Length: 328
Image 1 (cartoon, rainbow, N blue to C red):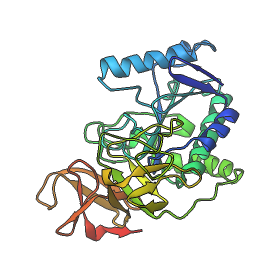
Image 2 (cartoon, rainbow, N blue to C red; image 1 turned 135 degrees about the vertical axis):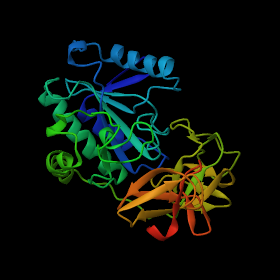
Image 3 (spheres, one colour; image 1 turned 180 degrees about the vertical axis):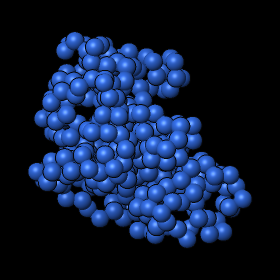
């Protein structure tokens, strides 16, 4: 394991130990898969992991105007993994779909007639995905694991690759970039690897809350006088957190560690699952407001506010009809 330029390089074995020990407050519901397209295999010389990751960060910050590199992880042709953006922050990878997601960039061009994926990278992609599913209790379905190709580039609406889509993660990514390809070729490999893992015990979640301040410190005890936990990042605005215990207006956000936040800087939210085949997202709490996206049956959302049988599912103005939600 090596850290340089703000990134940490790991083998998949090292990643397995690292992700188990990492404490993350933000609730994760899905994994996004992408390919970098450029840089591709021709740019990788076997030793320039950090330089390529730094160049991607520079492009994202300088050209795109983002605050950081867009992805959480990059998987290289030799199977090596580099960290990117903090897992406490949403990625900048799919318009309108970044909340509660982890973004993986697989270095290479995996369109037909592009790069031929190495066995080392292939194995690392499968194993890393299964490790994340185990660590964050993500379902191994085409709602829990998604491809960039399935979302409209402009609106972020999921249309499964029918209009205004990138080919990402590639038309030859594990046999294709369509939902049917993912379900037939990729998910069974992840499921097989997942069965080999010892899934951690998941404690009952007392409730979910969303952070309503820019940054919120994590402390070692339920008191303002308690020292900050320097071993984990502060949680940020819009992050949905799991609460395992409440004490005097403070919330314990870790099952295994004494990690506490002040409850006055949060708001309780409810978890729900979409029951309609397609559920439209609108910019206000009425069907007369413009449609700005959609969810598919089985996807999970967090409800921040309810008004007139409509549910707000984001800190932004995103609303869905309550009658098509089943609360968990």
